[in-house]
Length: 404
Image (cartoon, rainbow, N blue to C red; front, side):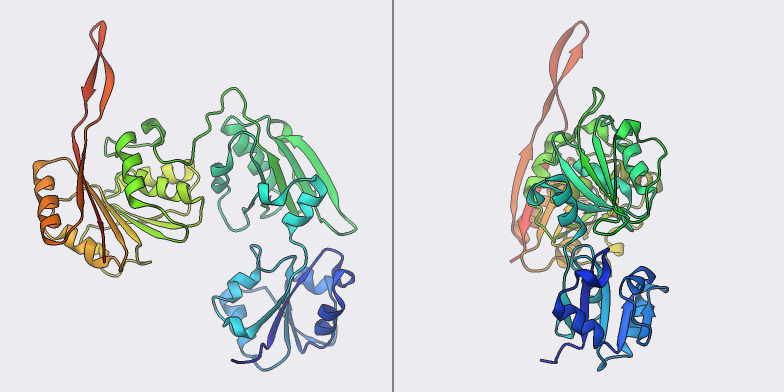
């Protein structure tokens, strides 16, 4: 095991006055200091070689690597492992290369100011991420804190809340927490308007629905009407059963092959609240547009959309799936086997078919490979002239198989 040569130190807005004696000693002893211009201003060491985050992360990390063996200190904001640089550093360096000394995170400071329970508050960020990702947390009596990208972020969040019917939500913006310029701004989403804040801020929101709000559950089975589609949609009742069979687990990846409007991949990501990945494979350009619109509108802009025809497109597709859903083209020769081949041990394959040809392919697969088959028949109430009756939808045959 090699000795750590890089130390990551969290710094607050008060600079080195908030550093522990041990952290300050490490900064004083550093041969190379790495940080943003703001960090270098908070902890000035004029005689020490400095690397500033002025280039892309990969290039800066390459510069840091050139100093291996020297005493390198990386200055970070607050807790370096809370949406911070330490997490990114571990993509380029080994854990044994690093020592980390955190300061209180922006979330801890904000909860202390607001008298909120940190475990009961969703900790989020829109720094480098679409603001639409916050839509997952638009639910009555929810509290969340979001790290801002810049001074425009609060008004973007307020506008999104208002657009979705949550205008009465209470917004608090905390600027420069812990420093001499600390300030607090309060308003509702509907009254925020075009105000900008200091670039260094966090946005705290108590979600309050207005009369037009229609909160969406994270439990699979969203109403069909919330998906933009051309009819290629796994219907609500079957979709809920399909997600149950797929068994979303934190950190896992789904391939939605023949994704249509993306409903299965989207509900997979919603169920995991951002703690998983999904790849929607769709060869139809119009439907890929639907997928993109639906992913943004339903709070999962991280959904990856791939143009291609299965099974050919599956070769080399990454990341490797933990689960695959096949909702179209089940009867395509070799497609079920190609999906099965891409799964690791313990991977799950779920496939739905409505035609006799698809059903035949599913039966043959189970006979040769294993798995279980189920059939779903759903009837919905519809008008029959002046009266009403239940009209059956097409019966769905579902394969569920786990690779052992």
